[in-house]
Amino acid sequence: MKRACHPILASLILAAAASAATAAGPEPDTAMIERGRYIARIAGCNDCHTPNYAISGGAVPEQQWLTGDRLGWQGPWGTTYPSNLRLALSRLSEDEWVRNARTLSYRPPMPWFALRDMDEMDLRAFYRFVRALGPAGEPAPAYLPPGAQSQGLAIVFPAAPQ
Image 1: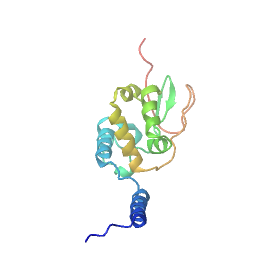
Image 2 (image 1 turned 45 degrees about the vertical axis):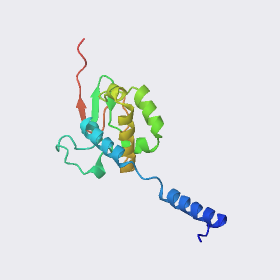
Image 3 (image 1 turned 30 degrees about the vertical axis):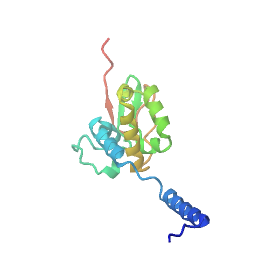
Image 4 (image 1 turned 90 degrees about the vertical axis):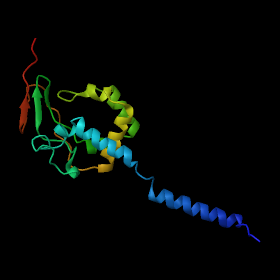
């Protein structure tokens, strides 16, 4: 003869299982994180947002990726610095990131229009990859208006032809 589990005992077992699952957190979506890693590589994100990435042929450890750079980009718009995406995305929800990528424009040389053209799942995958890396580094230097002298090195762009 089979005995039925007591309803209170069954409730306790289910509650314990749910609590353990919640404590561990949801399993990371490894496929999305891998897709985000791929996007960071092929979209050129690291070229500017990871110090020495482009000049080293990509030979920068992943732990140092997307931490921003102190190398400025100077032109008629002023001087911009590649932001620390790991800090920036740690302050945004995934939906906020997608909304910003779709609606904001940034100063040169950031190809903000490429973000607008990205598939939504690619934007979400990139976000999840950056969040999986975790916050690291320091904020990039602040934007400098035209005519202001940068304190460090800057790549200087000529004015656009008229």
